[in-house]
Amino acid sequence: MVGQSKEQENELTALRLSDNFSKPYRVLKTTISDQSLFQQYYNDTNLTLEYVIRYHFYTSIHLNSEKNQLISMDDTKFNLSSKNAIDLTDEFVSLVGKMYFGKKEFKEFVNSIKKPSAIRQEGTNDFNK
Image (cartoon, rainbow, N blue to C red; front, side, top):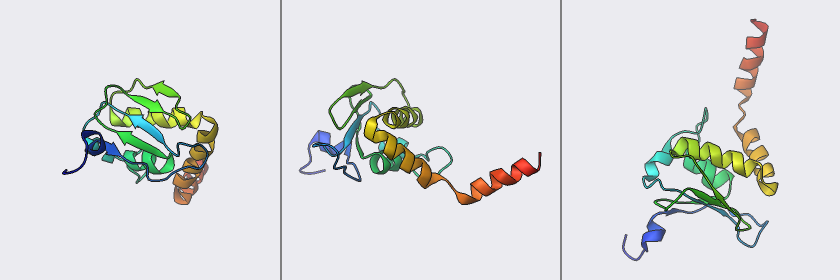
């Protein structure tokens, strides 16, 4: 793209900003260079990996980085070991879920993906045993 730096071309900005810190979003640096790998669905949801990271967890994604690393809102750096987009997202969600502000985000995320029909169906399955 004309007028964009190489870094900007490889950045998927956070879809929401938090007012908890002076830096209102996290940064997920990844060695993955293909954005489409983050278009896979997260677990059994209709949400893409990218949307979960960028919207629910206030995080920008920097593609084609030297290593997989999460930089928290207070600038703490966490190295991540996963190599593919699905495992990286799982590792990311787990890590953020253990953070002080991340716990609340994780809880809200889990509550947002619970499907009443799935809960009813699970309950029905219990009666059939």
